[in-house]
Length: 180
Image 1 (cartoon, one colour):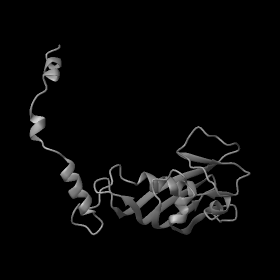
Image 2 (image 1 turned 180 degrees about the vertical axis):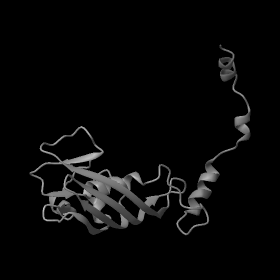
Image 3 (image 1 turned 120 degrees about the horizontal axis):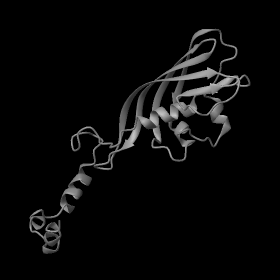
Image 4 (image 1 turned 45 degrees about the horizontal axis):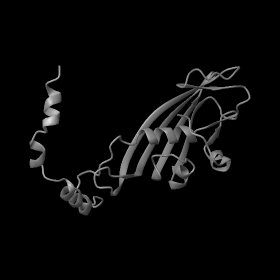
């Protein structure tokens, strides 16, 4: 799931030039805001206030990137449709190895050729944050949080209908139950 960029200018902000770095560990910090996710057309996240710390360890044959992303992302509750901030604390690691030629076989390891002088981490940050979005987003305790839309929950409750109707069996379905 490598993301495509619309703007080369914003992409440059997240490029780490590794050719001039000495062997060992180096730290990089980034502020991730709404503007970052605006660059991605189909992003699950549109609002964010994140801090990304990257520890890059340069070795002779590879780079080891340790990501630590903290802060909040804006989500919409799947139950009441209210917007709420979701706290995230993401820790990921990416390995980039140096090779004579680019190999696209392994998505777990990034291959850097002798012509590469920097590594862009924007796509990795984007992926890590979007993967951290829960499959079902629900504000902590519906009805009790300042973000929950209690009015929407009441309207949904009113539209639920009468369950007593559903207890009666439909003879058309009963006939299908006897087929074996």
